[in-house]
Image (cartoon, rainbow, N blue to C red; front, top):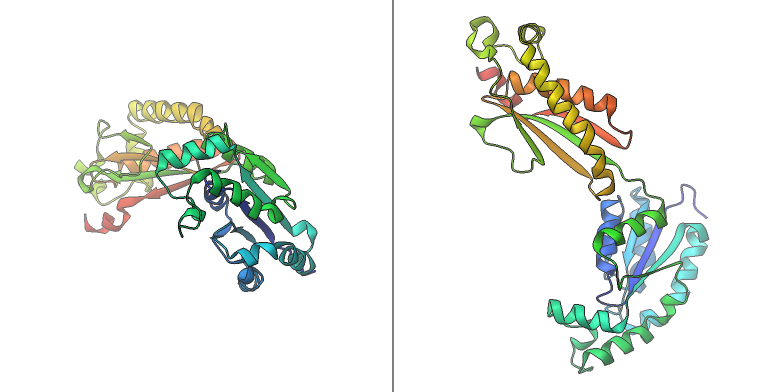
Length: 297
């Protein structure tokens, strides 16, 4: 068994039961995902990936792989155990009842993989045949998830629980200038142009919201502290709710006219408050979008 053992998840299941969704979820959790990989290439692919220090890997394997490969699944599986150890390999299998699968294919108008070449003419037969072809994988699976009555959020929570993945959210506090356009990816946007503007004082115009002179300027205006407190209290109260909402990043945009004084100062202050008071699962980054323009004014 190799040292620094990788974490390898083989994801399989019936077409339409959520296998691709599981791979997308695992990718969100930091896994390197490969879908529709022929079984005959699995060992070689894993060796190449682990050589490059990729240790969290999810492989999607289903009936799109050659039938001969599926018959050899147990042999490949045992070879992986010999290489990496039993604890390094997990098989997750998704399924759903036949009526649900038929409804999903009807709703999406997708063609079942076994019907694509025309050898199987109707969907119920394709679903039945697929179940038989996947039986070598199903009988060895460690985790079976029936998605018949699950929505995508419930599925993500199940996958998270099975693999012990903690929900971690990156909170980006972004200062910006409205004259350069509002950030399109902002989840929350606060306009602080109502605050006093140091730009109109000649000696402060060249400074930024990071400089002590600007901090001293704002210290003379109680409304600045009020603004910080209002924004901070709102975010401290509501941002933790996103830990239960399957989010990975949240962007809080704070804007003034040029993105140099007010928005920078407020973003720094709010970011510090959030870093101190949000749960540990929420990491705070402070960014200043218009920094490249600061020397021009």
